[in-house]
Length: 122
Image 1: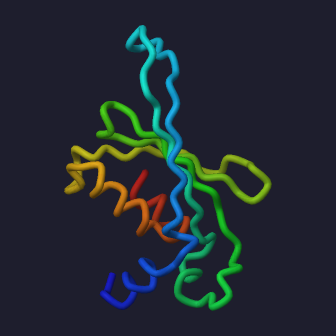
Image 2: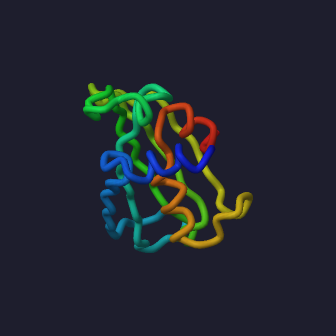
């Protein structure tokens, strides 16, 4: 992506609004309660939504990211406007340059459309 595109994405309020939720749940794998962090954000349905939509009312999709394994991997679910699950995928940080939680949050903020989610989480 060129710098101008990144600037548009970084200034888009819909894309940069992340809702972080933390909860303690019992894990059968670890046989104990563990903290589960969930991050919700909206993305554009089409790849040009961030660049061509002046009113920011383009059709959007909800992404729910579940961070696990000491925040070194993430599972994503993408939902349409009716709440139907349309995509699921995983992202392993160890395979990429995002070695810290802050770096991964930057990646999440720059996910701007459905195809960018599929590309990163397939």
